[in-house]
Length: 282
Length: 282
Image (cartoon, rainbow over all chains, first blue to last red; front, side, top):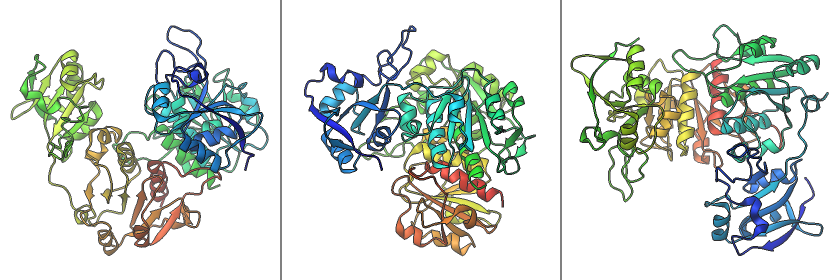
């Protein structure tokens, strides 16, 4: 259990108060605060936004240190009651609002009722997230759907995966929807974006990981046979195209989940969960 | 491979043509054709709507026999090329439209470009879907999210589950979004809605099924130990509340997927997929 994070409670009654600008227009395609790049190529703020009591609680104890909160009194009380927040000195502002004011700020009715916001910390490196204690990682390529990214982090957290490597062509895991779908585990499971893709896979091989490519290809080894007790990196690609052939060639084994006839591949996050489960049994 | 379904190609140029009323206003909360009950309690048409080439293809060979199609020429060509449809006598109408007309009929831009529509056939019964060949079924309780329902059908089809029993408190599997998320497998995997819930579970026990309740409860048996070679019915409940205690008591075993500390349960469709996978290995 972490110490409660001290917050200074500040009531906001005017929707246009500049102090809550980091929470404004969360769904606006041109102004939303979580985008790193805005339409037309301008640099966005790239803020990290947590929503709902449980996700805000996960943010509070994470490397994504919140610099402000916005929420209704009921959610503030729950966060204080759960020992996540506490009124105190040297405090982060908690902007307390009525539901109607919150709706005007955020731009829609957010029924989770509370938000936390953090600046992006310095990114972790691939070498940094595969330290000696790490036994299982998942490596993503071309996973460009924010819900799938979020689901993969949720499954990784639940099923004992130590870190995520975000390879080429992936969506931003710190997009608001990814964080929400992950139940906040994007903020907890260490991840690094590859700077040199797919060459960075060599770092995993050098560190003693067996690279297991997940593929629906019928010629692949059944997953049960492909997973061992060795340090393991699972590689998953987007539904449809799957992993690039060049990426597959860098892997030690191609593994398939046995599927029924006349069916498509599974959703990428579901396939990953099955691999994580198979791995956790070793 | 089925025989191609004969279609009569009819060009529609006026968006208000009455012949395409079954495809009109698909997102309208008050008029959409897939609802069985409209706001205010009026009876809806409850039509079964398939969208996109692969889902329409699954509908064409299913017990949900389409009585009309609407689509752009490109998708019609793909369906003919794939041997799903063919111009022929005694034919079902295929209403061919320009993309702009299709958008006006449907009410939004549907980039899958083709729709099929069927009347609901007589529902299957629980006793009917658990015939002698059936080895594995999944039973849903309180799964009231259309995407989760669709995902469960997709996972069932891919991982060797023979039938789905829809228990109390569940959403309609034939809602358009469920069919889409299932990749059309709602139309292929036999399912029956329980009329007497949870008493219908007795039909499964009487038929020799072992009833395995999936639960995140730490006191449950690990999934690996709970799954056997016997005929198996997996019971899954909604995220959050889970299965009702009365339902759990009717089960033979409570099974849990081992989870990391400080994580929530998995998404219900993901948990089900892992159970199906564990079962398929037997």
